[in-house]
Length: 126
View 1 (cartoon, rainbow, N blue to C red):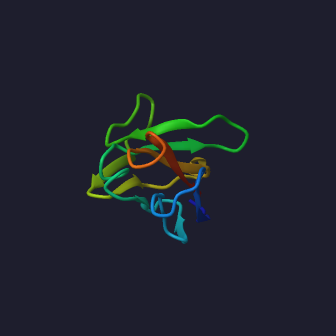
View 2: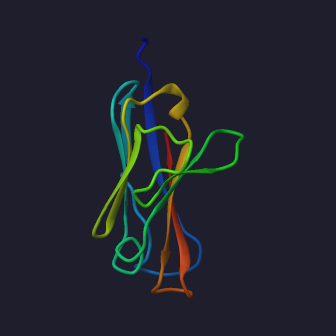
View 3: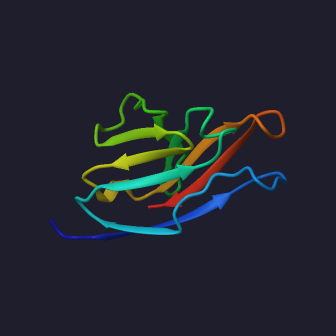
């Protein structure tokens, strides 16, 4: 199998105006086909610490689809996708990385501390 290098550029997106409530991810990460990738989503007690985190995959030109809801994998999502959640951090783990995993990945959750349960989202390119 030819080795391809995937680069993950992680950005934080936000809407609204608040100082201390956001989701954060690593600045960058790289992995090769066949490796395991872990995407982390960190927040605080009002968001990641209080609610499950949803993970969504958006392939170029397509609609976003859920790949993990908390630690539950939706129907049709391969078993090499898994999720974990501990305290104020949630992770999406992709084992045996494949070329078709190249996509934008979003983590999303609620925040009970701002704007009546505002949805927060962070974004990663894989």
